[in-house]
Image (tube, rainbow, N blue to C red; front, side, top):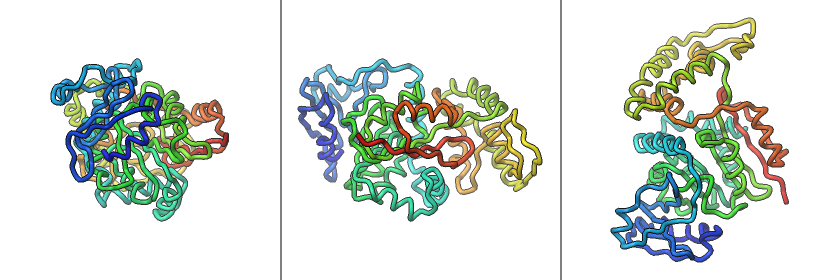
Length: 375
């Protein structure tokens, strides 16, 4: 953690008077330390990341408390967390401890940044870089490996902040710690330690639907956006009847598995995706199938299965394990809500947002870029 991060965190109500104690430093970063607030509650800095989790989500810091002779009282960010959120966190902690280089390898980036262009309504990588350059304060919620946090920090003169509730915070820190304008915090997005109206761009890509309530999560994150600032979020789209049935049936069997067991169980789906993809076959339907949500037109066979019947992701740019992880990511998290554009538009109306756009990035997600009204 960079020492200047405390100046940003201190704007929060509970940390209006604070002190920072560093126990271990390396290359100008605090690796172990504590942040004290005015109530003499402490927040640990572990492996370079300050932690503001509380309640069921708070890890056991007994070892840290004993190591540095700290009092037992710890933190004001107390909320009633649901047990299913804790289980979802365990999924993503495991995932991002396994796939620490996801998105950082060159064979991933053409696909991933091309997809970001589609989601933001942009055409080229240069347009994507220019988009990020305009912002002075960026917040990414749920960074995963941190590949996009890194990319944004490399393409803006502003400050980039990354918040994750899981161990992904540690992975993101390791992948971005060399960047002077990049900061990582472990916190629940429902109670982030930043003042409202702090950022002029916020991104929550594939994160909000992994919380107990997608709408409440959106509203909590939106509060941190400055007037006239922009926010992008991506949530799962409600799929057709056949896909919904298969998703529900598979998730009933997979969400209760240990991660290792679920990765193994997903291998057959991943193999199905690979073999369908390697067929390189297309079919043409002259008529829509409205009851299944399948439009008329020419369909790649693998994509037809993938979008309408079962998640069997495959991309030749990834190895088998990474493709399998994408399928695991769909079927193992305890919270994985799906929504309609009408539903999302209703949320934006409640927020008073009229300047927004749905970008058609892919058939199984809803990509939204909005601008917060001025005061």
